[in-house]
Length: 163
Image (cartoon, rainbow, N blue to C red; front, side, top):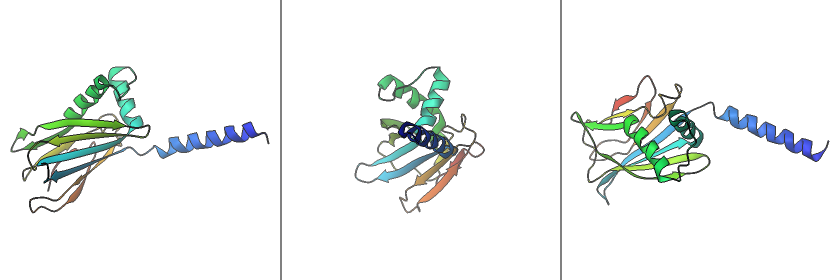
């Protein structure tokens, strides 16, 4: 068998495996209080392809998340889909930065100068409006005598009270 045919067959197998491996759409966020800085830190991780496809569908063009103006589009989207509220008021979640690779998009945010108050509610519909099968897992670090917890958000259940 010619070497080029083996290479082509291997490339096709890998491509079909990658496509099959991406049938599961998920996001992960970690929320934790950093006593050293006094800030609540939030780190999101999403599949790069899902984020890029979402933004392309929303805006009708390709995005380069290395550019600040394209990061701004993602920031606006997250501000609508990842919302923390306490006592009926929205908490000021600040954008810290982003790290984009071929596989993942990692977003860094914070609530400056505060731990999340007891009874904080999280609405997390990131990508669930675009991908109905999206599952978002949120790990909440323990603080102020509260236990750590892991919560799961879906299109059907996009809002929960944090422990």
